Image (tube, rainbow, N blue to C red; front, side, top):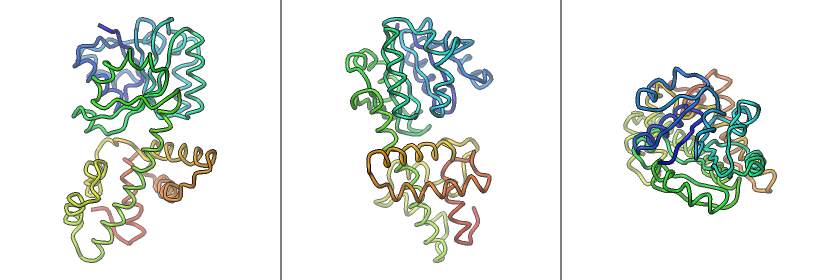
Amino acid sequence: MTKIGFVGLGVMGSRVVKRLLDAGYPVTGYNRTRAKAAWLLDAGMQWADSPREAAQQADIVFSMVTNTKALQAITQGADGILAGLRPGSIYIDMSTASPAASRALAQQVAALGAAMLDAPVSGSVITLEEGKLSIMVGGDAAAFERVKPVLLAIGPKVNHVGSNGLAVTMKIAVNLSLAVQMLAFSEGVLLAEKSGIPRSVAVEVMLNSVIASPMVKYRGPFVLGLPEEAWFDVNMMQKDLNLALELGQQLDVPLPTTAITNEYLTAARGMGLAKEDFAVIFQVLAQLAGLRQA
């Protein structure tokens, strides 16, 4: 069976690996902090001491890290993924990074005789664990067809959207709506609450209304209590919104709701909430409205 390497075992990456293990794929993984991978080692994952080692014996090597800087850190240098790639192997990056940086990295990979795909995901921890994740893929169509069965083991919806960098562009276009929707949902809850409707009742009604997108359904309840471990924290969401705003300037696309929502994330950081799930944007707005988190 196809040998898999995986670099970046965070909240989402670790669960992607678990799905691959459950599908029967042999996985060798690397993470900066080994302790976070203990449960995957118990589940059968093999350990690599560097990104290079994770890539060396793999037919397909994945990465899933927080930002462009982290992507460069795991791919470059003597211990990086590029140093471990072999001709004919395929590198799949699932990070949400700069599209330009992703395209530049794809050129480096091609020079080694390998192929790179950018393949970010749309969904949450819950959708991933339930096998409902959506994956968008950019890069060579033939390479995509080779890895499609592996990607389908991660999630049931896999779409090839075009050349290198376009999948991460698509992900940015999707993700800007997550924070914007969360802010709008928070506005509605607070308006209902200050009118005299209990917050829990307002949430229940809104989660069963026409505005209840999949994201609102799984993150909306966070206004009643944040998760102990952030699914997608303020810093990560703001990174995506900043990427969207940068693209908007480059392409002359105005993004007014994105810009406004981004300011609320800046306020959350100023309040010391950067490591909380980005649903904490509700607390920022609640404080401005003179209410406290329940």
